[in-house]
Length: 169
Image 1 (cartoon, rainbow, N blue to C red):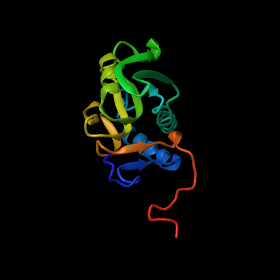
Image 2: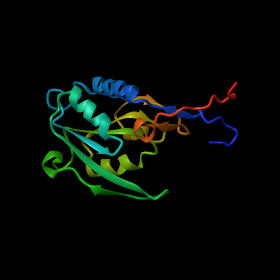
Image 3: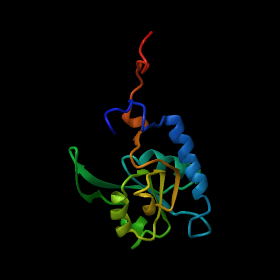
């Protein structure tokens, strides 16, 4: 963000209510797309951001098998080589992830999904939000935002009073 921008510009604030609506919309888009009669046999959330959307998607689509994969690509504030630090169960994923729905909150540059896709190339990748650089890594998403937009997720925020940007009178 350039320094002459007001704080509310290029920021996309997502409330719990909005996330719930958008994750349900994602479930609607995914309904019937699974390989076996349109059903998925499992949902795998990419931790941590994918956990809330994956829970909502699994509820809406009545998928009872839910697991996680954890990918770390940051050390403190600097980007590092992405690596899997917790894998989903092999019995769920099979050899290539076929029939598995992998869910995340956002695809930004696509590096995380690129790593997971290399491990499970036949899984279906879905995110609630997508940025242009990462969009080729997902089959299904709900909302596209510009690459320079910062998404503020509800788990990263607290409710508090905000001074009007034009002053207090």
